[in-house]
Each structure stands twice: as structure tokens, then as C-alpha cells.
Image (cartoon, rainbow, N blue to C red; front, side):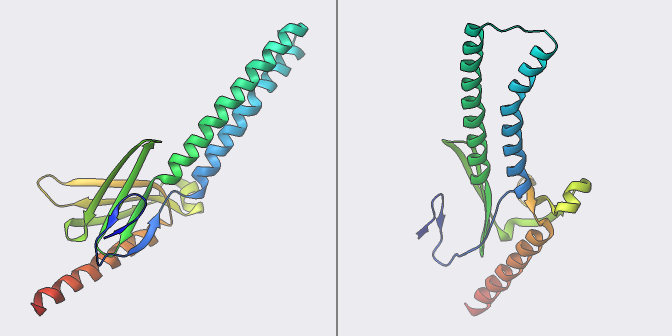
Length: 183
């Protein structure tokens, strides 16, 4: 078996694609960090400007200390969100779809679906922003005792990912049928 950093590939399995979040998600996380970095100084300036606050030198030092703690907390959280978001992905192989769901630094869940269990693959873009920036979500439905749905949101080019999965499903079915006829 070939080991990737998170899960093991079977002997004749190869990775076709790794699907992660669209770049706009990363920009929004960074944008939130930047906004929250500049929010306290803006509020401080407004408070002084409209005479809601008249800071003493000691109060200014305390406010500066609080602001430094604020920045540390905001950027620690921003970097954590970026890391966890970057680790969430779907891996499409020639035999299955593997979902890596990272919910924390030390919490991850890995699930996989063999192509012979997948009954439907859909792609959807919602709204003008997703349409203009070409991102959306992919959903797969699997057969079993109870129908199971899995989806990944905010994927770049969801129609391409859908067609890639369907192509791999067709190739898998063809190889499986050839093996059955050959034995």
C-alpha cells in the first residue's frame, strides 16, 4: 500500500485530483482578520473624536496592551481557520472518493465511497457571486441501507469536478466489467 499523509491508497489506486475550497474562502478569512485588526483603533478614534473617551497616559498603556492581546487572538484564530480550511479536501482516485474533514488541529474524519456505491453526483452554484467566480458545491448520493448524502461546499469549478467524478466512475465500471469478463 502507498501511504499518503492522511490515508492509505490501495495497490492499484492512483490519485486523480485533490479538490479543496475556492480561493474566495481564503480571501474572506484573511479579510475578516484584517477587518477585526483595524476595528478597535477605528472605534478608539471615534470615541476620542466624539468625546466619549478621554484617555489618561496610564489608560493609553492599558488600551495598547489590550489591543496587542486582541491582535494576537485575532491572527492566531485567522491562521488556525486558514490551516483547517486548507486541510479539508476531497481526494478523487481511480477507485473511490475520499473525504478528509478537518474540524480542528487534532480532529479529522476520513470517509470514502467506492464508485460502485455512488448513484448520483450533482453540482450546483447558488447566486451571482458563485456564478461569476465559478464555485459552488458538489453532492454525492450513495446506495446502501439508507441513502447517504455527502457534500463539499465552496469548490472551484463544480461542473468540472462533477464530470471528473463521473468519468472516473465510468472508467471504474469499465475496468470492473473487463475483469469480470476476463475471469
